[in-house]
Amino acid sequence: MFFRPGAYLALAGASVTSLPACTTAADAQIARLTVSEEQRPFVTVDEAKIAIVGASLIDGSGSASRDDQTILMENGKIVWVGETADAPIDGHRRIDGRGATVIPGIVGMHDHLHRPGTPFTAFSSTRLWLAGGVTTVQTAGAAQAERELGLARAIDEDGALGPEIFPSAPYVTGPGGNGPMNKSTSEKEARAFVREWAAKGVSWFKLYRHTEPSIASAIIDEAHRLGLRTTGHLCSISYGEAAEMGIDRVEHGLNAMADFVQGRSEGECLSNRAAIDALEMDDRRLIALVDTLVRNDVVVGSTLPIIESGYPARFHIDARILDALSPEQRARAEAAREAGRSITDEERKRTERYTKIVAFERLFAQRGGTLVTGPDPGRHIVPGYGNQRAAELLYEAGFTMPEVIRIMTANGAETLGAGHRIGRIAVGYEADIVLLEGNLAKDASAINRPHIVFSNGLGYDPTALARAASGQVGIR
Image (cartoon, rainbow, N blue to C red; front, top):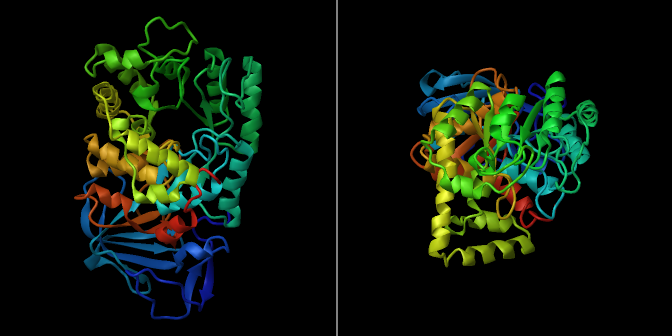
């Protein structure tokens, strides 16, 4: 692998541009990490030995925030974490972390490289992911799987700009499903599809809304036989049925749950809105279903940003998002914002559904379930900033900030089978680290203020990355 930890140049005399909180190393002859031409305009820290000194730390384990912590990085790995007074800092470039918070790089678990009208969004997505503190993504479905694989390899092997990507195969659906998706008509075809894309290098398969149960079962079984994993945005299959099949993850939580839809035949996709509206969180059927998911180790993928965006009464946007959108996308977002200023009583009542969707995620986690998160880019939800919004919404839902960060980092890493190397601030882990301005434990909005984003030890400037992506979401 080209850019895994340990790939670094021995000595280099050239200095790099520093962010305001950084100090220049005294020694002009210092070891530096390899920086590609594509990465160079955005990298402000490339020394092989880095110390973030005196920061608050939320380490991804779920433990409480710790103040006055120092983190040492060497050659793209974390080598020391602890009290600043005890830190062996000599020989490291120092970055002043006082008044700031360190968290692990965000692991985005529903981060498509496409959006409606734009089948491949690599240019804007890679830049905005890093700008938003996202250092790993699982795309949860590919519109152009070959290009997605190519991008993942280019980042991993050739120094292309972007976070580590766990790529997906093309979506799987069934009769009546969306156009350019796999529509296997037999279990034999479904298994052949899995083998084909496994050989190409994907790590996940996603079932979509109209997948037939027999096809879903074959996809799941064949993927597991090959050591790969499956997720689903389901409708024709209930969560209970999917859990019994062995699915690894389900997307969108209560919003895509078909289990309580009245009159649904096996394999039929019907609207679940009335069922959600009628459901209460203390319903014994719901609690039994949650326990089934937990017992079968089914992870739930939270996508609150895109779900929230469908409720005008909760419309949320900021200047950073507007700047990232293409002119056409920006006009749509501004029109939606205007519409959100005149909310009917009926619309306010409909927003109660969103409240239930959020409550389900709390219930699932409280009963021992593993929650992961991603923004599901679309409408005015953009990569990176959408991941940050997910953190705010989970915090609003009642999770503590250490719980939020665990959901967004370690839980995702463990679900990807990479929990031994990413998702935490701990010795031996890859140096995927976000330095945030402010005390995140006391101010949830600090998640929106990355100062430096480290990916495999390279420190990126979020402002430069965002500037490069300005006006590009919805174009490329």
